[in-house]
Image (cartoon, rainbow, N blue to C red; front, side):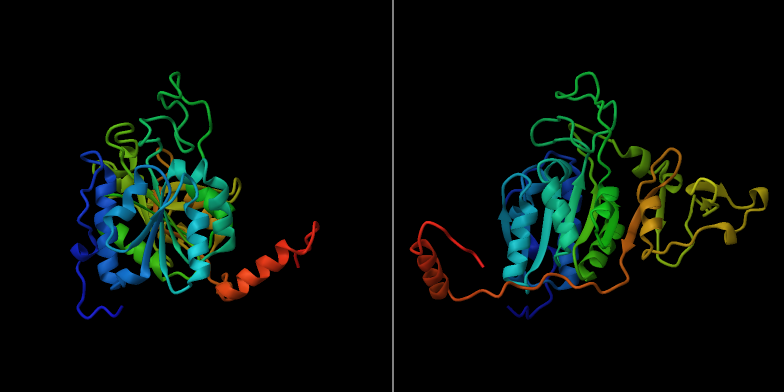
Length: 335
């Protein structure tokens, strides 16, 4: 389809009633994605949203594109198959932290290492929202829920660190109500060749309200967030009076204040999004000791090959091969 006129965000919205809890962060993410589609001039007939199970999985119903609501944890392999079968499709996977990192953790790992050319959006609210608030793989220690009435004792899975360890070549982070930042991050992800992994911090207003308030609340944002930009010093604070420095003895990052103890901007690390070691260090930062990194944390500089489309024989040839195989005898030899 050739889009004759430039489409607006409303053109990517369906006539379906959007059914999330009032105040859910998913509304803001939906708005950002629809704006991103319009800015990219995405062809609705060439765009596919694939989801698993969970609150985030409603997404395909609300996008005026093709969509596939799959089963729990299986969005990644189905999206992989769609992309390999038709590499011209522009595919976006939408999944929650439970869907991605619990039942779907194995599938996500292999998607990332295979580097299929698609975009993976992980909505992280650190809870199971659809099934009424049980702790999820990303829930923090001490989280009280129906499945952890005395508080979770499990160390949480860190989404960004997981992605980097699995071999992801593009890793970024934003949050639901940060509209300009989220849209810019989604555009960068779309421009990357290979699997683009974007963690989106998402507020579950009912079962885990304000779990990210220590990062996103306006009263603390300047000190609790650091917006990382390739080639720019890692500065934060209201007036960029703070920065990140590498402690060469412990090989860890530490927050310092410019002007104290003779510290100047020359002592501050410069963000290199192509450096996987630096990406791991800044990707796992979190308040109160260090700010949360937002933006493109890692983007591989090399143009690594990605999986190509499957060379599929015609249906007639496939049927003939299957018939021959079935009637060959008791022992099959698959070459």
